[in-house]
Image (tube, rainbow, N blue to C red; front, top):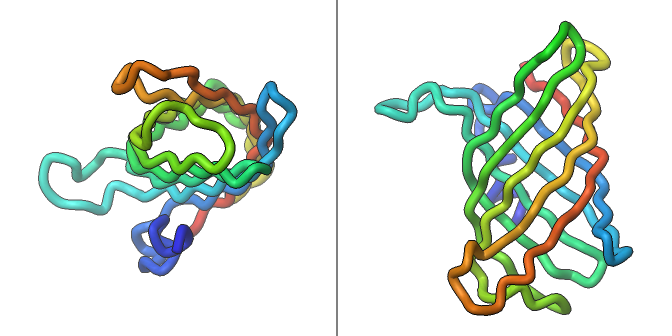
Length: 150
């Protein structure tokens, strides 16, 4: 289901990149993250915006899935900074973060390995943005592999 929601069944003409990674949070848990970055092949005012969908699941089965904007900015021929902001749905199994609507912000640095692949190290933060009185937030550090689709 998560794979279908991330658009893996969508024509590759819309897709720019697929990202997979392993993550760890400061509490010692692990997990995985999967992302799909879409090219700006849309119509209307959002035509050239860099859209993305992402999901993360941790060792105790808490998961988040969201959709929003991302940015990759190359600071040299091989080194880039990545950032994203995505509202989404959080489903707690073990860790209550206060409600189900959560926003993920991500910042990372990476290096291009080839024209089609790169690796990056990122940190992300999940927060409900104060939508509920309980808002402990959650951080995760991820090592990510990015593959560009042509």
